[in-house]
Length: 394
Length: 106
Image (cartoon, rainbow over all chains, first blue to last red; front, side, top):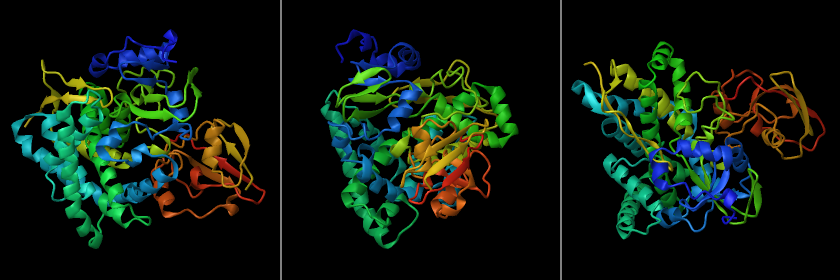
């Protein structure tokens, strides 16, 4: 299939995707919506309709990719399992992450983290939102949610980055493997301390939920799933906070609307992750030969499900590149779909959409971007601003 | 319950067979019934398969805690007749379930 010139896109370069993937996605959606991209060694699936179809047929499009760098780094996590095996592990985590408990127990915890952080820099009148706010906010919240009370949030952030680098280590760089092995050893050591304590002292944390579930997870399952949650659960809320802040700062009329009507924060959040989906691409693998988007895929085909593109599909969203909190409400695919629908969706909605973003704009009066020092964006598998210098009136 | 009638917000009506054990959400998404999304695939985690039950309510299971919590998160207002269609399944007894699709799910 990859030899068919009509579906082979050799023009796509990873450096261009890192810089700005959206013009490439637009062109792929129009002419080659399912096509083999040699640079990524995957078939890209770029249309909203094909992504939705694929997520509704997990029996054909498997999450259990082989071989998988994620499995090498973290063990076999629920993110790479299908069917009953996946459901069993997910069910152990769901009660901890339902909206009721997030609202009643975790919202005050998240609010305190956000207030403390803003309090630490508000007198300066300027900040760089990635380093000063979004990154520490996401790591502190995740440490609390997991139950990693004795872990420094900076260690959590370091572990997360080391594992994520390794899941993309196709170049086989030994230094990347070494850092990642150090990170996973650190997580396992923290779990060795934590599990005996939480076994006799259950609380609201995720690890406690895994231990005390109706069908409890094994030590090995807890370890793998905690690693995937640390790997993924940190950069996504971080990047959503930053993308949302930039979206509003670049669109002052919309900021005025939401300041006048706080109920619109919900729209701000959903539009933010539609505009720049924090996870831009995730893998699937075909179980048998199947047609998708007019393309015949062989059994075992490795797919890149490009939700970053599906969220900007002009067949669904008018003027898709614009940040517009007033746009017609349509289902985006930023949380994925089907059995693997983002487990942290409600944490993200409340932590980012109801706490972090509203607090940032409420407390930092006259918040604005810095002339001559604009936000810097990067990434396509994960995408978000990497630098957002701001000033306010204090 | 062996069949389900969907009443769309635009006045459309769609009648579909509901096999024993099959969920109303799944039958809707498999047949492309507009307005039922089912993002989470039936885990009661997303609240995008919300319906108002207008007939056949007698054969339905009670709302459990997870569904009750998620019904508080629906995009269209929750009413006394609100259910998540991923929690409603076809049964052995013949009968028709009638559900109204709300104006929006997101």
